[in-house]
Length: 175
Image (cartoon, rainbow, N blue to C red):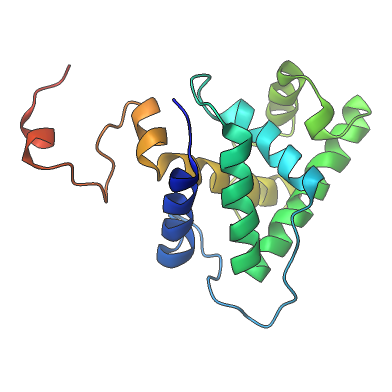
């Protein structure tokens, strides 16, 4: 299934307007200079999303670019954290593999995330390198994906919270 611009805007409105689940990134301009997400930043986030999202997801790069670029622009403090976390992830993979994260193969990216270890790190915005990567990159991308109807459907969550779906959606039995 294809992730669309509408999906990205839905996720963005939930993230910036409603705050991220389990995250406390500011959603108002705090006077900080806005961070910019360059092409390499988008490539890195898209490469990370390719590891995190189901294989059936299409247009991942376009979705990530739309969501992350606007997220960084709207929340300067969060954007600075994202840019810093990308630098941390690249530094780690350059030390281990000799290449930036986005330049690694899919298998190497999975391996790098396991070795860092991101899956077991607590998401803490001012914590260790692993905690910041988990908070600013992994959790943000996962939230963006699952906050959309398309992403939720790909994950088997046909009727995510916030998308009521009408009375038939909760009156049907499991498939």
